[in-house]
Length: 160
Image 1 (cartoon, rainbow, N blue to C red):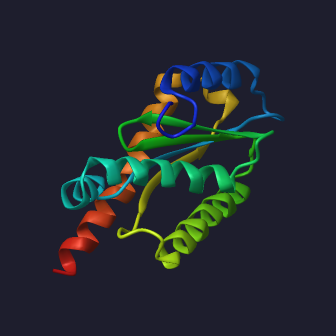
Image 2 (cartoon, rainbow, N blue to C red):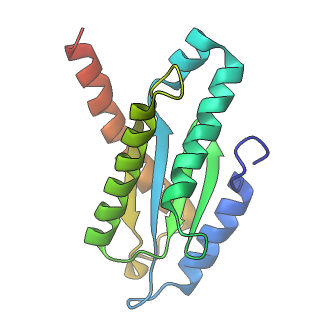
């Protein structure tokens, strides 16, 4: 992706297909679908150039948490990203998600930008026995991500 320096959606789909085909009970992977909460308000408040900076900042946060050998970060589309990792244990994946949240908090606490970023994340370890396709895996991640997005939206309304 020219804007963020991450892989694009086409490359992501190819990587996921390869990961699915090489997965087994003893060797699997995980994926995290990430959406920037309230991204439209960044664009509306600060302009699209700053919105582009928020996308690049998001990519930087995700890349800083990732291993260049074992993980890939891709722009899924718009303000959504996908991180694919060789992590195959649920507890390790939860630790990794916490690492991303910690890096996000550090970014926001730095005050480098006039905006704060928050993420809705849907994540899962791929189960080779499920025989899920790329599209089915993406649907599971999307559903989990939107569940956390609804919680964020509800919390925002309750603070008004």
